[in-house]
Image (cartoon, rainbow, N blue to C red):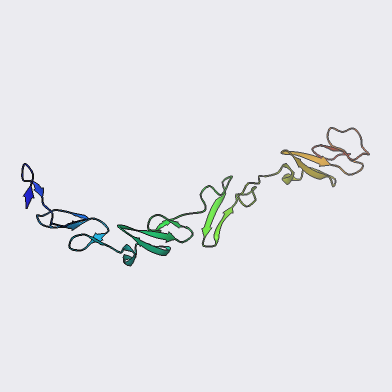
Length: 166
């Protein structure tokens, strides 16, 4: 039954391998072990421990799940979102079986909402002028006869800051 200086340590059943004692002469098996002497490896795969997995491999004293895409954790029960950190500039990520995609807030575009609004979006060039986004500044390429705000020539094609006036 009991041993130790105070006779308070439970004695396990002789031959108990992977177990401990709660009552004298018992063998209470550790996790993943079974049998009378706790010497039989439990096949956890038969218990359906791998939730979203391609396969389950029984190991001595444990198991290994081969998770399906989008799932993680020892039991493949944690959703592994491919959305984390994917969308920029306030974009919202939508996760699906086929993958993930970003839904951008107005003014932003691109696969990851990485392209911001352009100063040319407001069509600042008048009279048929073509707007060029140059490092975040709107420049107008004016047609013949028109010039930009800081140009004095009225018959040459110029690229200047802002509109195209006579």
